[in-house]
Amino acid sequence: MPVKCQNCPLRKHDLFVPMTADEIQAMTRFKVGELAVDPGTPLLMEGSNSPQLYTALHGMGLRYKTMENGRRQVINFVFPGDFLGLQAGVMAEMQHSVEATTSMLLCVFDRSELWSFFRSHPERAYDMTWACAVEDHFLGESLVTLGQRTAAERVGWAFLRIWDRLNALGLQQQGAVPMPYRQQDLADALGLSLVHTNKVIGSLRRRQIANWRDGVLSVTDRETLEDLSLTGSDNTTPPRPLF
Amino acid sequence: MPVKCQNCPLRKHDLFVPMTADEIQAMTRFKVGELAVDPGTPLLMEGSNSPQLYTALHGMGLRYKTMENGRRQVINFVFPGDFLGLQAGVMAEMQHSVEATTSMLLCVFDRSELWSFFRSHPERAYDMTWACAVEDHFLGESLVTLGQRTAAERVGWAFLRIWDRLNALGLQQQGAVPMPYRQQDLADALGLSLVHTNKVIGSLRRRQIANWRDGVLSVTDRETLEDLSLTGSDNTTPPRPLF
DNA sequence: CGAATGTTTGATCCTTGTCAACTGCTGTGG
DNA sequence: CCACAGCAGTTGACAAGGATCAAACATTCG
View 1 (tube, rainbow over the protein chains, first blue to last red):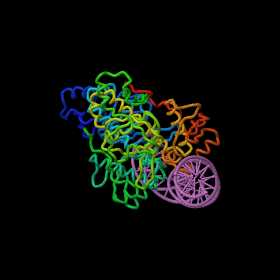
View 2 (cartoon, helix red, strand yellow):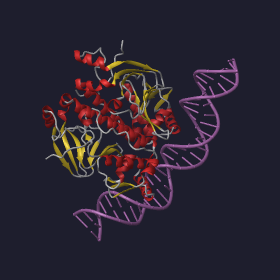
View 3 (cartoon, rainbow over the protein chains, first blue to last red):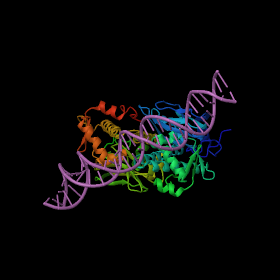
View 4 (cartoon, chains in turn yellow, cyan, orange, purple):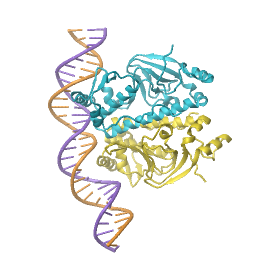
């Protein structure tokens, strides 16, 4: 029995939600099945032309690009509900790689059905465009962070952003959320060196503002963290599609 | 007589290209008209909920976000063919501002028709999603630049990227393209200080690699520039939609 | 001519990167 | 069972790239 997907941007894609007859038919054609992968598994590769699109159901991952000189930029973190592979679906090929950090469960779609899906189900097409626009928004936020914030501001911003995101997904317990990444991953996401990132994290910990340890992030002094990172609450994420 | 739009992501949106009868009808409803603005005019404002979407036909602009502390991050430069306002069209409101740098001519669409347009014209919906995915790609590139490249690499990368883009638009003449921005704009785009940006530009000029002066950019030694910026030719821009 | 705006240059400071070493943990093989 | 390698995290010393400050220069505009 498939896992029910609360967070999928394609709102009704699993079959336990009421759908019209032809929606069910199209969906079953479009959704190929589910896929479970181990930590470290590459899901999509830069330059590849994957026949599949995914929605993350469980687990976490990383989206990144690598440069000729070997340096790596983490584009963002992949959480449950994220849609993966739209670039490959719409453009010729992927422009970045996606890899599982924890073990993950993914909902798999068939790329070749994307076009007919667009045609026959404009609501879902709209949802997909919406998801892409939201993505744009977050990338813009990240750009501001890398371009304008100091190291401490960056780390604080990342902590808040991640905490809020996972909290919205219902993964928060007693002020703590799972954050199963390495410090190197965060450093690569924020454009900082590993060493400096480590020192900033340590400072936040000693000052009892936020504590990220053993894959668990807890925010103890949210107010100070917001000040420090020059970030308000994220009122920018629209809860759901407009239509 | 409306200007013919070669570069609009909505491929056939002006009425001089063969369209079916109902496409013409929907288009005329969707396309409201054209708009000419002077340099410095704000087109879309952060937090606003504009009733209009635009396609840039002529002229150039800037997309940017401002932080609470006043610092500004330029998200990207707006060139002819760019689609503006999709965020506001799909999400609740704009998350960044857009402003004209030169005088511009814009093709204006009615936001309220977007949904019915999506429904009745899946090909155009697909185009729009495609445009959004391309945008994503470029933002990812920028993220890599801000996160991983040094100052010289950043400026070199920006020069190449802009030169290629404008060249593809047919705006190149004798190795030179128009680039009517201030050094401050480039600095804000690359996350560098004005002073340092200026020094790097000067260095490229003295080394006869690239020359940006009086709103005109010319690339004299492309090879060195590619080396320096760790950037190959941009083979990543798919020329046109897949369908 | 003076004001405003953008560009250029030099001097100095400091945030962050780099290098190096050490800790603690986990898994593996002798 | 211990030795050892491998990996992530931690810390200190030092160097450097870029920010900041300050001032001059060029151009345009009223």
